[in-house]
Image (cartoon, rainbow, N blue to C red; front, side, top):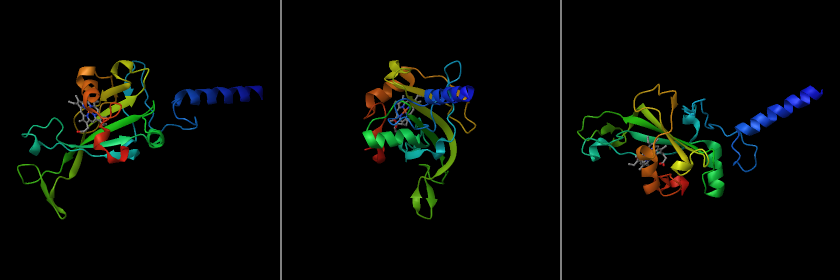
Length: 193
Ligand code: HEC
């Protein structure tokens, strides 16, 4: 009996350690929580398309001299437990994971890349084409203002399985200089206002 109780105790302790401490009531599992390998690289998040979808910025080639850095739709998702905390507090807690997936435009006959749909001429999503991730952990990523930045490839799936944290120059610097709130471009997501 004692052994069983001890095992339960160990199991609960482990579960608590895996949970992010910032989820206020301590009972959240934090779906989509960041997982790292022994080298400290982030494992590619799974199931992120089922998280909370917050918006889809678009910087098409047609409006960027034919050479947009990211000509695809940028589909952005936040892990649901962190999103709930944000709604309650207006802050991104440690344990927030934001995934941005690039989605190619459906090719059309026009030079600007637009396509004729029954609803009108415009831009419509076609195929998945890359993924970037941000993870908030104010201790682990102190040097990059509390967020880790990871690139899982700019190509069709499958994306790479693990990614190391990117340098300040390649990601965090631009977010720090331009994003409205805590490294996140909340100015482009009405649901985060
Ligand atoms: C030159 C500026 C710049 C750089 C460099 C940059 N980003 Fe961003 N990022 C943006 C902008 C602007 C948005 C929001 C609008 C958009 O997606 O076009 C954004 C959005 C994001 C989002 C969605 C959350 C949010 O804040 O809107 C993630 C995740 C992200 N970037 C990850 C990365 C990663 C990873 C890198 C490095 C590999 C990176 N970014 C480099 C400007 C930048």
